[in-house]
Amino acid sequence: VLRSAFDIFTEHADPLFPVLYRPCDEMVKYGGDDPDKYLQKCVLSGAYDYRVRGRRGTIQAVSFLTQGSNFGQGGTMLPTGFLDTDTLQVASDGSFEILVSAKPQPGNWLPMAADTSMLIVRQTFDDKHTQAPAEVRLERIGDGPAAPSLLTPEAIQAQLLGAAGWVRGTANTFADWSEWFKGEPNRIYAGDQAVFQRAGGDPKIWYGHAYYALQPGEAWVLEVMPPK
Image: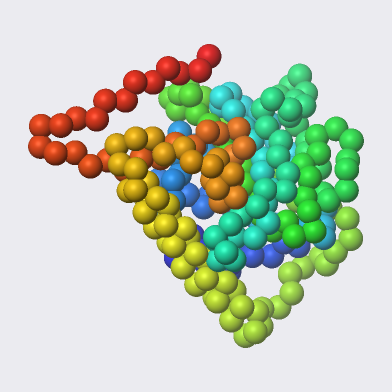
């Protein structure tokens, strides 16, 4: 979790020069990341405009979520805009372009708010052996500096404190959730889906969690009817 925090707050922390990277992968884990997801993250600011260009690929689903705040600021990551496979306009050659801004834009528009600070790209595999994820590139557009500012002791101090707060908030968030689930063992805890959305969840995903407590010789049987 600390390694991922350094990515967010030190390595890729400048919204003027955004970098899409993978916060969770085969080596870095925290929270409830999905092994069928190809996850990317990027620091943004609602004060600027951005352009996302890409090629759809063959992966089952793609979604783009902007959000404000983070786990280090009250344990929430409030959604500020959403665009996904159902609403994304894709050209006949598989290419697409998205404008990310606080002001409405024509075509594919991913909204931000004044306090937007993050972009999450979620891609979902149906078959990792045959499907390829979408190619996604992002750039800031409009006025702004041509090069990043020089790093100062004050800036790195703020970044390290932000990383520490995020580690603490992340651990507390999921530890608190575990306590909720333990209160209702051996059943799927759906609860209020807004809780999971406030933690940066995908609004198109239904989140179910469970704590199981079984005696010797017992088994927990789950019967599932998949959607179409």
